[in-house]
Length: 130
Image (cartoon, rainbow, N blue to C red; front, side, top):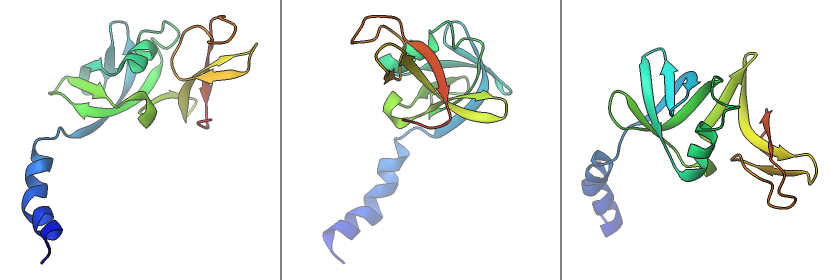
């Protein structure tokens, strides 16, 4: 048995033991980075772009599906924005949360000003991630 296999057999369970369990929750986003889900209210955290979306008044009140790492029975750390862990649920569809500048035709994944024209980007829920 080579060293890599030996390492994998003996140490993989130890490495996985220290990692938090992946979790997915669905519910309505409330102000203050809270998701009102079927299992109760879940406190949400994440990277800076994710927090930008969670604090966007246009997203608050939407039904969302969020994936991340469970941080206890009532807390979720949403996966980083590049892992596509946030979806809006609307009319039976699972939509990506994106932002669009009509002037420059630039798409972003967190709210704010367009980096080109400095106009505010518009919320644009999409079926495809482009």
